[in-house]
Image 1 (cartoon, rainbow, N blue to C red):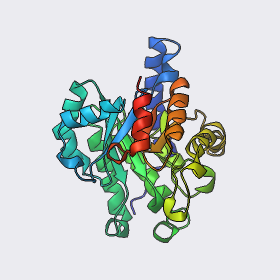
Image 2: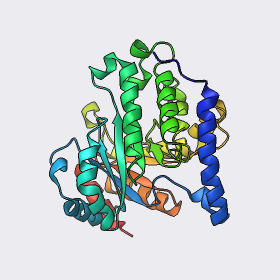
Image 3: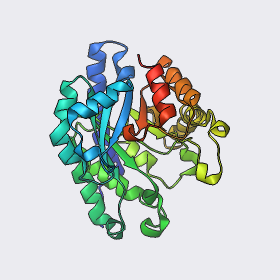
Image 4: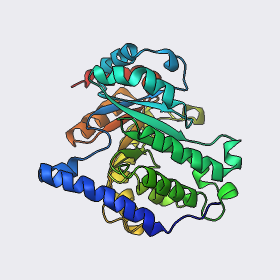
Length: 306
């Protein structure tokens, strides 16, 4: 493996980037820094490019569907490192021209072949993120289980690989902090081997935790039985989990924690109550994903359009 530079090198680059954003915010007024977000305030949805017919929709079709349910932003996302590029070239400008916000979603989710060589895979991750930052859109990273693997990563799983990626991205794109967010676990206290802190150096302003409280009907759960679980997960992440995590990780400025929630297997009221709560609190909310909306989600979203 390539020997990484000391962690303070990465931290220094991140600090410089954060300081630049802070200086701009102070010049803009006392409340600007607190309001800086990678994803502008509103209701966002993923456009999952790996699901048919997503790759074939035009910008006009995506805009019409998003507006029907009150979404203000669209994340063009692929579970692969390169799947987003064609869609960004094809539809991003059209979506933005129609007045919706656009972001690039990158799935840091190695397949079986990629997971055999993490040195090569992490270099590909850094390349993908740096390439996405060449576009005038924010970037949202999605990373999950493989990053916690003790089998492929050793005692500390793949935290060193995540640190290497962040360092490499900051070297190539010093403006990255403030332009990248991620979708980490909602409960870092039980994911001690996950690179939550490492990716947090890049995603220093806002993070959208996986508050995935939808009913798992295959496990015998009912929608009514899971009423409010999504909201409880998100509340715990905001109020206790991430403040405690930031203390443990010695993160002086804890990022703003908001939610990424499921578009299915929840009741109308479960959707509606959370949408209204997050809107009243001034928080951005992200839905996974637009083509997965079930009837309950559609009813709730239509009824809460602002």
